[in-house]
Image 1 (tube, helix red, strand yellow):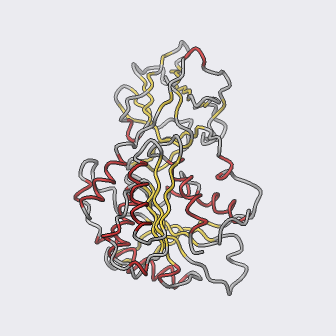
Image 2: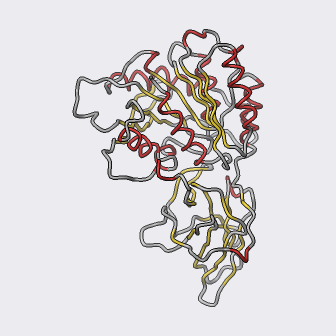
Image 3: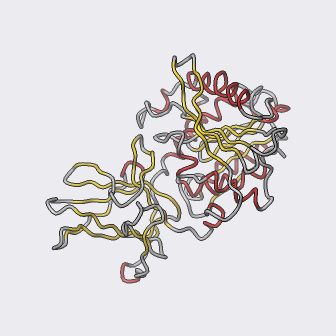
Length: 373
């Protein structure tokens, strides 16, 4: 990878922690409701209309309970206070960014998940998740519209001497018209996550269903697989080697998908996109193999510059995005240089978000209508 791109990627990653808006504790609205990603029937954690989160953990023999928010809990956390009934309770000191966040609970030095919340794979482990209601959440809401299907596949990988796993989104109607072929987006997760991230945390299938129902996009397939990233420890990103994943993706997964699904099996019918470290993978593979993909998208995952692209004629779209709390000036500068060089390039900045899933949900919403037009 070019040093420029790696530096840009790491710059985005520095913003990977939850951001808090400053609000006076005296003005906290007491309209708390259970998070929509709680375990069935669980009242806590709760969120209010301002973005505060409230927690309640039963640990009668504990000496200390802290809720850690952000990637790996690196921002510290919210210290809970024990009540006479054995429950530890507390509310975040500030309002959180809208959207989805990982967190965990530290009880007397041991790390645990909140028994009240559903779990999501992130930070190289299954973490608790919480949803802060977003003002624009309608585009990823579960609605009464025709729904596509997300199915698991196991594809043979000679390079790994085993079968590997991927998930494939097929749009509504895919199984009815047996003559129709579809273009394909290969969509990558970030560091610490896996092939479940985009459908579980990103709600990409619901975004697709809603936009197809509204007639805003041309239906396409989405393939999500593990990017082989999590053996790299934080701080050692520069040592990541793309070759094993590139082989599994290009030489093994793509042929399997083309053989088993009704795809438009050529370069014009394929796109690759990724968030964060998945963007770094996208950047490298699309430059290495311009014969395979025609549409490129980096979501908080670095930038392209015109000099590193070998054949302009093979590139139909370059989409680059990030949150407004990341490095929007870098995204805008890169896209302007690409436009000046004659590329179809688009920048998108998600307002009031950082390196987090609401940035990437919004980014996907902006990207999808631009693909395969």
